[in-house]
Image (cartoon, rainbow, N blue to C red):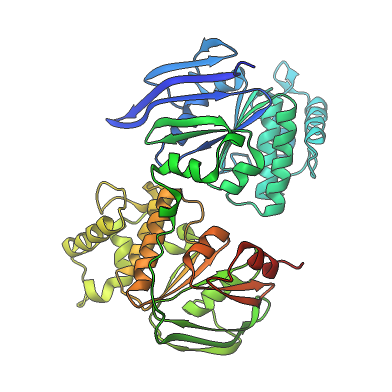
Length: 479
C-alpha cells in the first residue's frame, strides 16, 4: 500500500545552523510509525514543518501521492494533519466541547449552535471511550485526559495524519495504556500515526514501523518487527548499545552512609541500608514506592520522623524534577553551576563573573554540554543538556555522596550515556552513588547492589549477579 504521507530530502536551517540535512519519512494508513532520534536530531523541526509552523528550505511533501505545501497551521488542519503535543495545548477555562470546536464552531450568522456542538463533541468522546463528558471543564482534567481532548479535536478536524509528540512523558502506566488503546483504535480506523518518544518499551509495545534521525538526517526506517532495540540505538547514536552503560569496575571501601530504621509518616518506613565508597547503590521500585521521598530525607530537604542517618554529611541530590527543583531556568549555565559553589567563588560575598564563567566552561567541556556560551540561559538548552548542568552544579562542589533521582528520565540515549559515564567515574574515584531509577536496564547495568522498594518499605536487596529483571520486578510488584 502506498504511503499516505511522504517526505523526501527535506532540509531546514536556522541562521546557519542546520536542523534538517535531508530527511525522508513515510507514514502509512493503518500504521503507527515511531520516530526516534537524540535531542537535536531534528524531530521537533520535522513536527513543526508538518504542522505548518516552519517551512522547509528544500525537499518535497506528498499527501496521497500529490505534492503539497503546509504553509500555515490552518493549512495543516485543512489537510488533515493533527498534532498531540506533550505540553497539552488546550484552553483550561473552556469546556471540553468548546475546546474540540475552538477552530470552527457549528452555527450560522455568527451564532453558535450549542446543541449541535455538544452533541457532536459527545459523539466523538464516546467513540474514543473517554471517561469524561463534553460539558466538563478542561481545568479539572488530568494530563492524560487533556491528551485525549487533543486527540478528539484532531478527529473533529477529520485528521488523517496524527502526530503524538512525546505524549507519555508525564503519564502513569495506566494512563499510558489508555492512550495506547485510543492510538490503536485510530490506527485500526485507517489513520496514519507518528509516535515520538524516548522510551523503547513504548515503541515496541505500540509501533508498527520505525524511522530514525541522526544529526538532522535519516539513517534508517522499516517495519519494527525486522529490527531490535540494540540496532535502533546504534542507528540513533552511531555506536553499539554496550557503550550506553560504561560501568567502571570498583572495589567498595569504607562505609559512607549508615541508614537505620528511617521513616517519614505516609511516605516510607523502616528503611535501613549502607552505602560504601566506590559503590553505586541502585534503588528500584514502581510509582508510589517512596523512593523520591527517601531521597529528599537523605538530602535533608525533608525531616525523617523515625530512624537516623550516620556518616558523611556532604551529600548532593540531582532531583527527578530537574526544571522545578534542580535548576533555575532563566539563570545562565554559569549562574546555576555557581549556586552550590558560592563559598569558593565569593569568599567575600562578591562573585567575579570571570571566575564564574571559567568554572562553567570547565564543566561544559567535561560533560560535553552543548551550548554557545556559559551565559546562555538553561531554559534554552535541550533536556539532556539541562540535566548535565544540574550534574555539573553538584559535581563542581565535590560531594562524597551523590543521589541521582531518575537522572535520565526524558533525555535521549546519547545524553544518557554521558550521564552514566560521569556517574561511573564519580563512584570509581572513591565516592558513593545512590541511583534511583524506574528503568530496569539502567539499574541492572549501573548498580553494584540494588534495593527494591514497594509501598514505602524495602522488599529486597540483590547483588549485581542476583539483580535480574525477573527478581526486581517480582520484589517491586504485589504479586
